[in-house]
Image 1 (cartoon, rainbow, N blue to C red):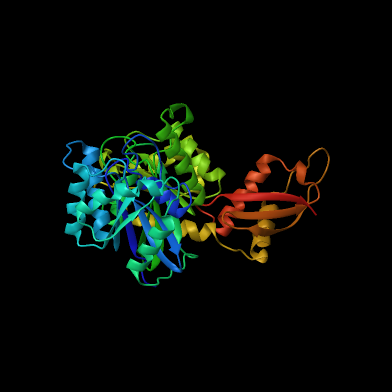
Image 2: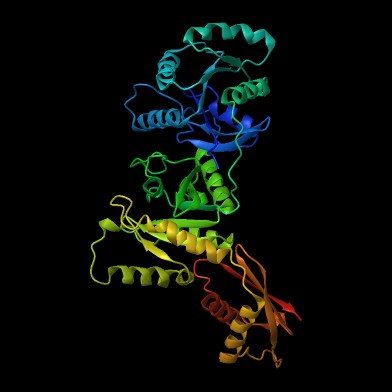
Length: 437
């Protein structure tokens, strides 16, 4: 299947790029705030208009010739977006008129030699149309006026986009794609791992905690399998979420987690496995996603013969549930074992989405009961008659018995461990439901 063409929205800060992006995709995907420079990475979404499909990308506000590290990183992201774009929506503020940053960015768009539509935003009514005349001075052949906030003339703009793209594309079938969310506390190296996997700097990486504020979707092929990576803003405890922007980022991260198939929880090898890491793991298991723990910055740890084994045992001692999930020791800096993460994710995804025959499930149940019978409770003898899989993603197994409410937690845990071993459910939550036969 052909790749969908990419349409990039570029412009200086606070001209309404994220508002236009949200208006076109018709949902709150990019973070919108009155504070300048909120969108710092590229955000992608598939759009269909008049039977034509394309990928729309929202970029950080272009700030030319600034020394600040974030501004420099944003400029680089805009330049990368221009390189991959089939069409550029160059957004300007109709109320402000042409400013110096617009002229610098217009030169950059022209140098890219990409088709471009100069889009004059904040033209809220017909009386304001006269404000657009000045912008012809930027030397762009095609100009559209819109109000991203009010939705005025968005359809006309999309007609122009579809006409310029001129090719009908169909979106690749994504039913077998593996969506992998990369989550963790701030500054543990999530974006660095994503960039290593992609082989390019798609997310901004600096030493400043919390640099990534939005969730970024990226596609890649690994051994013939299509993965969609979602690099997310760092999850923080609610008590530490103070800024509105941080709050929105945390909400976005949790939404990305809920939409994922497999979640890679990244921790810091130097810092150790902390309570905050445990809370993130618990959240992943609670929402029923496949889970892989990636211990990053392994290159910074002084190693003995058994260092990896000892740390794995320590992590599982602190949080016993992690014995059922794979742990990978990686270094984004040196690339050590980073490429193996996708193979592990595929294994977890296979277990998470598997369909098991009823005969296989009952064979495991029979062996478990023969090894250890359910205890008598209140003088009642519990008999589990049979079991069957009633769902996947995650795996759900229903067990039919005479007294489902009397089965002790300890025996439920025992059966879960038996099913995990017998069905090879490493890396996926398991839901057991006991029903009256």
